[in-house]
Length: 427
Image (cartoon, rainbow, N blue to C red; front, side, top):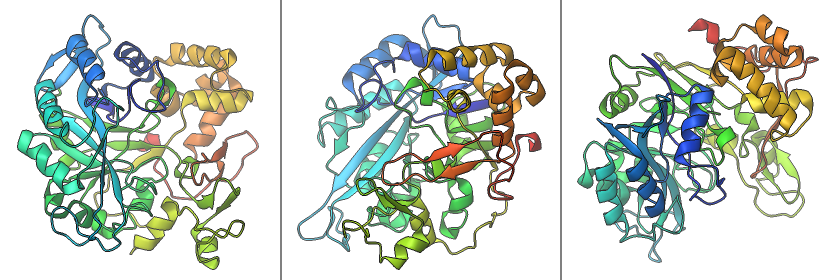
């Protein structure tokens, strides 16, 4: 059976996240979007874990909301941050830290059961305060975290979150690491996947040959209900889905497809300085020695720059047996662009409800719905969706925490990036 999965987003207990992110609202929202498997997010937070225990029930690592009837399947998930440094420039595991700087990495953890997650929480209390934030920070190295996780339960699954973002991505420009092995040390053997993040897509990552062995995962990292599913995974599972079947499919890279944000729209794609309103591609940054021409401080180097630094292949290279992907834009954003309204506008919501009502789910509208029928319901939105499917978009790239600006209007005639993505009709 085919499932669309979004296994990394947050609850109302994480910083800068919507109060609407409750289990009940998530259950309803993902059903409307057409997502079948979701992560709970934030299992380390005591109050969220209390909700999880009281409101979810299931077996084999797959849970449903009691009394819901939506069919939505939850897995226990959470994002955590490790932060570590040493005045002697040596990590706690005895490995030399070449810069002596503070190292910050975000990780996503999947648990095979509520009980295993609770056990891990008890151990993690020694390294940080779980109640402060849904994405807690621990004073430990990445390798120590993974070692602890697998002492608790060998069936847990962990991977680096938004691997390329400057501040907390394992391969980001500020992380100080150039490989998964360098970051996770002797525990890299337990890492089977990396999350692409909003500012990168598989086409960019395929340029780095040492990452070929990892599954490339896409998740929304949503901080509000409408953002759920802006990135996702499609997988086929034989028979009833279980936690073990799902994680095995990831380990073995048996994914059908990933749905990707346009990376240029992500807020760390280009290099730049938000306060100085300076944005530029790596080729320009290098002309300035990566120094801001306005304030003369170091630029925040984006994902594109890091990929260029680590790449050993030309742009356009596609590895053998790679998992295909499509770029997509959330339906509310498409409608808002067409109507020139905010995504929270009642006009946008009414148009959204009409299309979802006609096609069943948001993903049906975006990826599978007959464009001519969409145009019959809402001509301009249908044209915009057709432009996205055919990759006829213009984007002002995001930089230094500023999201990119995308144009999917009717007047766009040329495709952006020929041969960049597969078409949904190919699958």
